Image (cartoon, rainbow, N blue to C red):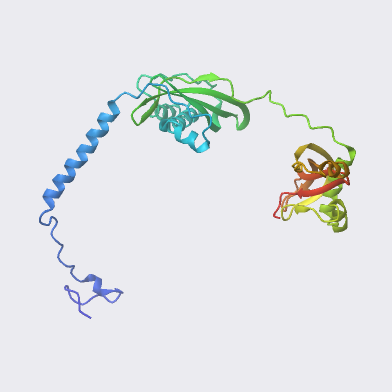
Length: 334
């Protein structure tokens, strides 16, 4: 091994070869590099100029074509203007900052300025008492529409307020955020205005059909047999063959079984093709109808003391031979 140029290496140096003089550095600018650098600089400034010109062009203000009512989901997604998704993202980010008011009001104002157009005044747009802070723990865009010069996005937010380390529910609010669109740039164009939360609170589910006691009883017995593992009872309820089943998720333990409720018909078997013996066959066998029932059980997960009320779906068939259980769905793996 060679000694370093300065003489013998000290005894405590593990790798004395690292002390050797380094190789001379290669030249910094090889031949032909200057023309390439000039060409790259011209290309860069060309791209910057094109981007600046696109930013100065006005956005199209014409109506947005709506997708054909016969088009599928893929066609509707492709027909949506490309700027709407970006606008919804900007609106959601803005409203989160807009509704979040803490101790550092200066930093909040700076963040809002980054998302708004010049001249938009948001001072005192949101006023909370000095000892109260609030923030939006959930912000969700709920729709958008094109307007002259931009897009309006409806955003739903849930508010939490904090006072003396105590959290209170600030409610669920909805705002329409106006946005200006110019080229690829999307900015907030004014203060958001309040709107109705887009939730169909008056929506009611259809009433289930009147169920015979035998249908509810069969659904309840099927869940009891599933929980207890009574194969003979399952075979009897299935009309001589056990119904298909999905057990409860692994580790869940049922502690009680509630009543059954028939939630509606699950469809009917197709009618037989007309023939010489069709009327006689129908009179002899009748037409079978399918029903769906839900049985409420209370169960505990594998870990923890909590219990949960869970619906178990039971598919039934009503025919000349009575009620037959076809499927029991406990939610686990088949």
